[in-house]
Length: 276
Image 1 (cartoon, rainbow, N blue to C red):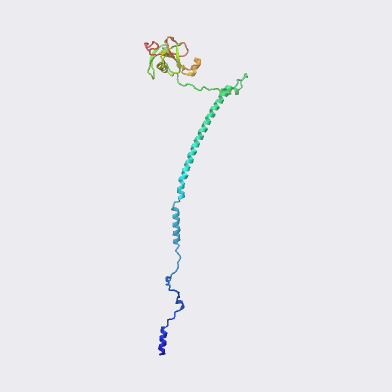
Image 2: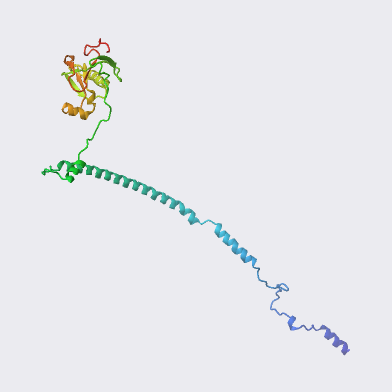
């Protein structure tokens, strides 16, 4: 009886558990640690790929400061280039005008020096004086280079007459070779051709007043188209066409140079003359 009781008591008691397998908690907390969990290091691929992605993003992403700055730099560059060009143009014009003024002033000074040089008192001038006077001799400001106009007269018929028509107004006129007026002058001018001299007479009649004398023709000297020669041979007049108001003074030429009389239609009474 005792033995049975002892066995029953032994079976009712809890089984002994080793300390290593017992976990005591104040509260019942489930163990969430995965069985056989082991910490492993990340593979080297991930850091490398992450760093490469960041670098590519930094390279490809635009920088806002650079894109907003270059238009301003371009604008200021163009503005500075324009201002430099304008300033250079003004400076060039200023230098050119100063150069011209210096040239003109130098020419005037050389002319004044040549005119104010006193004559040498020595009987035999030195070579230096002769060379200076030759180099500073004034040159004429104007020289006519046009050829001497032709009157149409020939040496075989020095006193012949012939009819013509002016080039622009187509006014008829008669040329009297080897003859000229002695007086009755209205006005003098420089004409390039006999036609120009006759047209000046026609224009004078078209614009004269009622009380003014009428132009009947003009005396024309072709060699005096060179105004320098005209002034030398006439005593100061640089003209070769002399408009006339009366045909009574026409006479043969007694000068060493050629002179012709030009008569407008109805002016000299020679319209019925035939060409010779």
